Structure formats: structure tokens, C-alpha cells
Image (cartoon, rainbow, N blue to C red; front, side, top):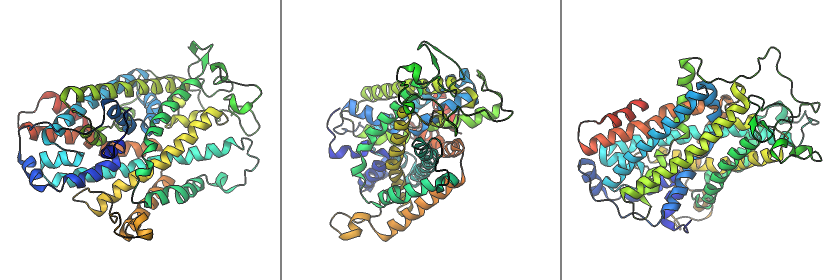
Length: 483
């Protein structure tokens, strides 16, 4: 990958970059107004300094993450056959939506998602689009915290699998661990006015996402390494040891499930054994699962700033970027969804990592990496939401002093308004995460309201306005999917 230049910060951290880049491009109000009233494509922008490979990596970074953890649950709701078909279908729709955004960004010479909407649908749409993106960021932050609740609890359980110290406070209320981590790590990072020091975590997050897929594969109930004992992923001794990583001398490395007495956990009284579903049982289960697919495949909010910083962003290079990125994403998602579901069937949890053994060292590494990734990703989400709340019309990001404007705490953390808003956002997210325990509900609502607009509805409407022509069937279908 090519070295990252300063102008590539927006591409490295699209959530943060979309806000900061918006302020830079909104200074030229005359060009913005002409772009908003123009209906004919203009010459493509010259682009930035990022290579095609660097841009591809940035797209993968922006998409891979928490969304993939729910994919086995989606298969359980839709059935394996329909679930795989829907995953491929929605990946195709995401490719087409990205192509629309590529054409819009090229024609309007836009560097952010908000710029695209403002220059095609009108200046007031910058506020609407920034508001949707900020709401999406806040909903994502809540889902991150819900994931952290279980992962923190299971990390602690790894070091005390027999519950010798069952009287500790977090055994009575596991949310106390989330409160502790939020107050000591997430909140201080969220107050910082400059998060460029966290940009290294993007690459770490992408590596962690691929590692979690590998862990799900390794701990699937393989039989002899060639066939799978379907629906038996939760049974003692069926995972890990047959994958070639087991060790009888170190019980923490063999992947066995351990109960309070050292045995495999018993099934709840009257509970039916997990079973494989190839097709959905009801239309309601499909409608509940579809938003999770949109969430997992949402690259719309990040694509424009990444594409705008790519060197020589011709239509062909843009299409190659979109095609390769979604091909890699789809392969990773198909692996996670199919193997994760076949391991646990309809007994899989809405976060597949929670279905993995608690006492396995590779799984512990995955959980620690996931928590670290989320701790560093949360401040980025809070920055986007706070920036829109403080400057709703411009989407210019952080309400904080410029470099050298103030000293001391103000130079590090920003204005008092910024600190108050961030305190409120972190507290509200923590309250929501401690109140709502189902991950699929939070992600589903966030995707149904926000991701649908970002991926499907807004790009389609903007393209209609740009070409000023009769809607094509393909664009109409994309908008219809969002609605």
C-alpha cells in the first residue's frame, strides 16, 4: 500500500473525514450553488494522491466490522438458501448504488456525501444528509456498546471460568464493565478535538474483521477437517481441537465449553436442539433480517470521500475499485454467514462471537481485538454526531478551537460546548446500550431508517436530478429497495 499523505486522512477515516472535508469544500458557495442548479455532468475531478490499492483498502476498512457479526443470525432468520441469495442480491444493489455515487461525485466534483446531495438536490439537502449520517453514526455507537457488554464479560470469564469469584460486582451486573471502560477509555478519547492519532486503528479493524471470520471457521464443528457436524458447534470438544490447534496440556487452548463445574453447559429444560433451516418460517423474520444486510453492506457514507482522494479517478478505475471491494467483502461475508450458521443453526446468537467458546485462547484474542476496535471506533462516531449537532447546516465537524487559538485543556479538548455535547452523547449511548440488550434490534432500526436513505434513496433521487431524465428501471428499483 502506498504511503498515506495528509490529504488522505479523509479517506482513512471516512466518518471523521466526511465532516472535515465538508467544511473545506463548502467555502466556495458560488460553485456549490452552480452545482446545485446544474443538471449536466461536468468534467471529472482531478482526484487526490491515493493509489487504487490504498483506496480499495479504505473501502474495506469502512465496511468490514460489526455488521458481519450478525450475518449468521440473518441466515437463521431467512433460512440458509434464501439468506445466501439475499446477501448476494444486496451486495449487487450496493455495487449499483456505489456506481451512482461515483457518477454523482464525478459530475459535481464533490468530496463528501453531503456535498453530492447539496449540489444535486439543493443546499438544504446537506443538512438532511448530514443529519441522517450522524443518526447512523449514533445508532452504530449504541450497537458497538451492546457488543462490548457481552465481550467484556466473556473476557473476564476467561480468567475465572469456574466462577470462583462470583460475588464480584460485574457478575451481578455485567453492564458495570461497560460503564468502567466507557468512563476510562471511550469518554476521554471522545473529548479530544483531533482524532488523527487513531487513524492506525482502521487497518487494525480490517485485520480484526478477517481474523474473526477465520476464528469462526476454525471453531466450526469440523469432522476430520473435511466435513462438518452441522448444528453441533456448541458441543464440548467438537471445535478447535480437530482444527489442529488443540492442546491437551493447556485446557485454555482447546476450545472446549466449560460450565461452572468444568463440564459442557446443559441444555435449558425443554429446549429443542438446534436445527437447520433452508427457508424462512415467516415473512416477519425476513423483514427483520433485511435491514441487517443493509447495515453490513453500507459503504455509501464512506465512498465519496475515498473516491475523491483516489489518483486519476476515471470511470473505469472507479468501477474497478467498486467491483474489487465488494467482491472481497462478499467472499468474507459468505464465509462468515455460511459457516457461522451451519455451526450453530437456529441456535446462533445475533452476535456470532457470543456463540464461540469462552475458554479458547484464539477466541479470547478475537474478543480483545474486537473490544479494542470498538473502543477506538466509538469516538469517531461521536465526533460525527456532535459536529452535526453543533453545526447542523455545514456538517463541518468539530466545534473546537483551531490550532494555536487556545492553550491548555481547550487546545486538547475543544470548547465547553463541545465537551458538553460529547458528554451527553456518550451518556445517552451508554444508557441505550444498558437498556436495550438485543443487538439485532438496534442495528435493524439504524439500518432501516438511516442505511436505507444513505445507500438507496438519496443516491437514486440525486441521480434523477442530475440527469433530469425519465427514471430508469434500475435506479427506480434501488430507491424502491430503500423505501
